[in-house]
Length: 198
Length: 438
Image (tube, each protein chain N blue to C red):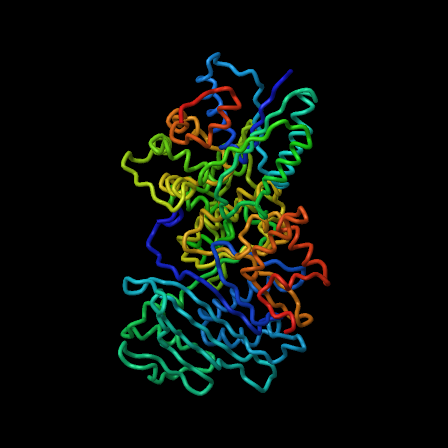
């Protein structure tokens, strides 16, 4: 029976990041390949995470893989809500329930503590290199998101949620980040059949 | 230092304004966040709030004769039965650096309109207070004026008791500009120089046309210039890094665009002489903006882009140049106009990031945009007295409740708010800082 793992993320940068995470997981897999198909969907948009995720699951994923496929859905999010996030906040329980009712077999949450930008900053050196800033550039800000914004500012650029990374993600050392992140990524690695030491 | 802050203008950081007695506005208090939004039905008075603030700042800068004209402008005098004879009142709270510390400044004035031929309008109240921006500090009165007397504080240790003679249509802060010896002269000068930019050009097309005609006095103007290509050209010459930033954010919003090119073309000399009193000059060059699109073989004139793209670029350009233009507030009427909703999230975040000490106030009919904002940044216009525009912010408890109630109905916060606004019998007042029985 076919298996499919779908990652629902908010933003192009996140799609790029999770592609790298999955590629990293593949490199750690004993067979260097998965027994499941992987799909990435950016569900950022005017209808909101819930509607977009359900629409994409029912109208794009299921017609492609069929009713018999076993679907594992990975919902990727930040634990902190940033100020320009769509309001009201997402009710994850409702998203889960609707996806399960729609045919998903399993739902996994990957939640970045406090935001995915905190994870990127585990490899701040590469970001500083990508932005062509001096090696001794100070990183300041109250949150990972603010720190990344401040780094971009220093490089005369802007960083915002949902933006295209334009090469930043490609520069990241994902091994370093995955090791630093640890537990929050474990459910994803488990679903992919990869054992990681925590 | 912010991304868009390049030289040392120490601008007045506007925190709040109060306007009363302007068109149909009644005691409208707006507290500013980086982005503040006004929502209300059409023809309610959202634009009047923006005009009322612009009027209040323009009045400070106007000469005595111009002030008389402004106070006699029949188009601005309240006409609502409930507001007849209401004076114009303006108050603002600003933050500024003074003597190496942050100070909070409260300045306000009130004048009577010329409501009949026989009664001259006059300023009847004016005050200026400052305090260090630290919790627990009290305001020190620097100017105190009523219809009969005007007093100011002439030395740091004394009281606000020195008399000053002012004309009925002259503000004390205008007169004190010449008093270099007073210890708060820096604040007086800054108050006199405060600026706001109003972006209410829903059709941006005309700003993209190459135009050699320049209004006199606007030769070096950036933010208020009528030719956007000229502004962008000057930006590219004088502030290259800002030009690059503008291109960068624009391309992030419209990824098919690869480059923005701005060129200056010499034109033949104007034959004949313009009269000395002509209100404009004719430059010997024009500027043209081009767009290089991934899917097109040649760059095209920016004028050929869609209305939405033109407006977005114009708004971003104005925000980028605002920090060099000493602007405290940018007012944008319906930034969503002609723009696809899928861009709003990035658009609003980019606007926020381009801001430094300057604030932005928008009017909006877009539930999408409103859903991306913090409820505390939204001011809602509702009629308590028929025809009178009042705006209220959301109660602390109302902010959370609004989101919970929207979620319960599977609606976005913007949709929920707009649905209540358009329903005269809704319970919208329950969420607002207003007394329902008022």
